[in-house]
Amino acid sequence: MGTKNGRVWILTIFATVFVNSADTCTYGKALEQRSAETVRIASFNIQVFGTSKMAKSHVVDTLAKVIRNFDIVAIQEVRAKSPDVIPSFIKHVNADGSSYQYVIGPRLGRTTSKEQYTFLYDTRRIEVDTTSVGTMQDPGDRLHRPPLFVRFRSRMLPPEQSFTFWMINIHTDPDEVPEEVDALADAFLALKLARPDEDDIILLGDLNAAPKQFGRLGTLHDITWAVSGTTTNTRRTKTYDNLVFERTTTAEYTGRWGVLDLQSTYGLSLQQALEVSDHNPVWAAFTARESIPKNTASLPAHTGRLN
Image (cartoon, rainbow, N blue to C red; front, side, top):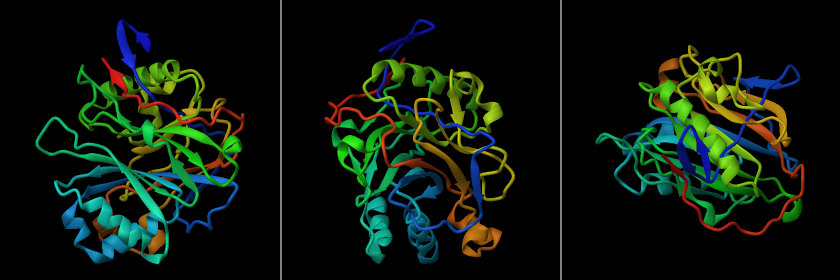
């Protein structure tokens, strides 16, 4: 539990990303095969991902190709009343013999248009702590869609040596970006206090903000972000999506990050790419080995709370 400016926050996860002159950016290039030494984590707002999009086989094929590039993908804007959309999509992803699974949150939103957060992960390389899955409680209604959080661990090494980390999936309201980004800053600080047993937290998603618009989130001690100096939307005009974490704490960050440009990677026209999404996936790479060995015991269930 943390207290900030008179507000009480009871939370369970968060993270920070960092970029410097030594970082390596990959934009619009096909990614090399995933390595046993690294974990490649992505965020992807799949615009209005529901039954209509799933009915377009060429779009689903492209989306499946995107997912197979990564160990974990945080997806925003799942917008479907049917519970079958993500299970059906997973079948398409796994049609080539892959072994992806998913974690999905509840339908959220202040209006009749609800969205869900989802994590897709490669079970051959990543495991999830099933007791850790939760949605941040937001009784003060500071966030239009309270984030989904989950604890993951890489599987390429023995458990006591493996990178273990929290991820928090967020899609801010484009009409309330300054207020919501500030709320994320407060939540980040509270999470650090609430879960000192796990120091690695990665906040990622569609922030609807470039780093210069991160406000208080961008001024937190040691905070950093992966995506910098480039665009992330499909039209190549804005920077909305990012991964945020603490530079020193999350020493597993390799400095490698990128934007998977849908047009250049898959030979699509702008219109074809927009059928897939109005956002490009963004990603960063982390070492599969924990920088500081830690207790690998499973954590108890927790529900984040933000007042």
